[in-house]
Every structure is written in structure tokens, then in C-alpha cells.
Image (tube, rainbow, N blue to C red; front, side, top):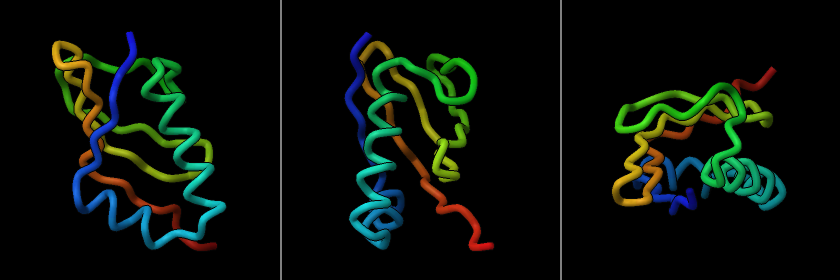
Length: 81
């Protein structure tokens, strides 16, 4: 199933604060997530969930398959080490 991504304003602000290279990497990983290639466990329909991308970003989502939508409600950058 093809999904469209919808970013909540808070998630978008987090991504806007990243460098271009980081944004490209995260967009690639989010695209893989939306394409149905789970990065850490299967997506749960009609429920909120959390996925940690390979880049370390933590993404809270809500999957709405009836609307073909993957809502990203929160994106948290990895902690600086």
C-alpha cells in the first residue's frame, strides 16, 4: 500500500532545524517507512506508534490506511553524544 506522509508542524520544525544532508537522509528513511518497509518492526494500523530510524531520529506516527496516510506527529533528533 502506498502512503502519503503528513508532518505535524512540530515535526516539520524539527526537520527544518537540521542540515540539508541530515534532512535528505531522514526523508529517505521516512520514504522507506511510508513505502511499507518498516525500519523497526511492523506498522500498526489505526494506532499511534514509535519508530527509531537508522539515523537515530525517533518518530511518532499514526497510520490511517483508510486514507492512505502516515501522520508524523513528532520527530525527535538523536541526542548529541
